[in-house]
Amino acid sequence: MDFRYLRNIVPTGAYDSEIIHMYACRKGAYTGQQLDRDEYLEVASMSLDELRDAVMDGGITDAKTIVMTFKLIELKKQEEKK
Image (cartoon, rainbow, N blue to C red; front, side, top):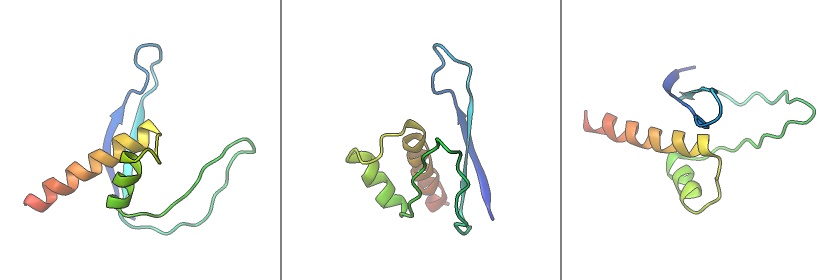
């Protein structure tokens, strides 16, 4: 697998010291989930364009996913300029 560190974010800096480190993976295979009893996670496969569209139309509202989406879009633009 090819993991790439994107950056860290501080989602609630006004009242918490949490830091989230964000990574992207270019290759890999979905091998299932091992969730906690009270945990919910929906896994979906979509292109970067589909992901952007889901963010823009309100289908995705999670802040971490939104930040990562636009970071990946900008990185893709930079790579295409090379």
